Amino acid sequence: MEIEKYEAAIEAVLFVMGESVEIEKLAAAIEQDVETTTRIVHNMMDKYDSSDRGIKIIELENSYQMCTKSELYDALIRVAKAPKKQVLTDKLLETLSIVAYRQPVTKMEIEQIRGVNCDHSVQKLVEYNLITDVGRKEAPGRPLLYGTTEEFLRKFGVKSLEELPEVEEEVVESFKQEAEEELGQLKLDI
Image (cartoon, rainbow, N blue to C red; front, side, top):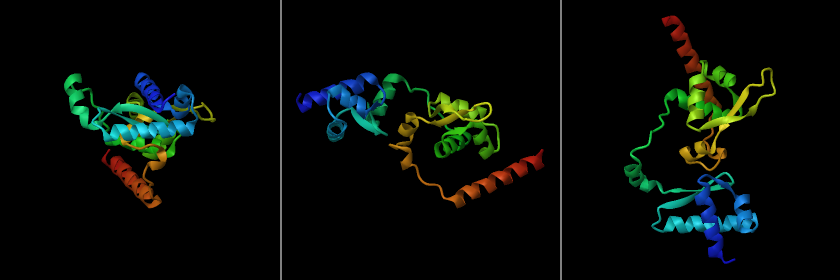
């Protein structure tokens, strides 16, 4: 098979799947090894980026996905009539940060860190497909464990969790002190 036929097959698979596809599956589709397939996909990514095309291929962990170039979103919105926008409040961002940095994590562990009930936040983040349950903890009651999704990676523009900025321990301690002070104020105000 010529390189163009490999590219066409990869393009077809990514287009039809509509979500990310692991490199191993793409390699199986074109009957090539992972290294060759990765090289072909990266060449395709370069071609899409250097031409006036409406689509691009992005990498997420060891998977690839075809998507629309961000500079063309306005054209899509005019056709789709402004899809419902997900709003991430401070509470949702706090909860999402805890999940991203502590995963896998239970709801109770999130609540211990935040100091408040987080049922609504967890439910919303699952609804937005930013977190998902990734199993159950080997503990009494076998609580659900939560982790981030590929959608989280897409929304925040990172290929993997290793690209998340590191949080210094002093900053974490500062946040804990602020939260404790706020809780103290709330108790005094009640």
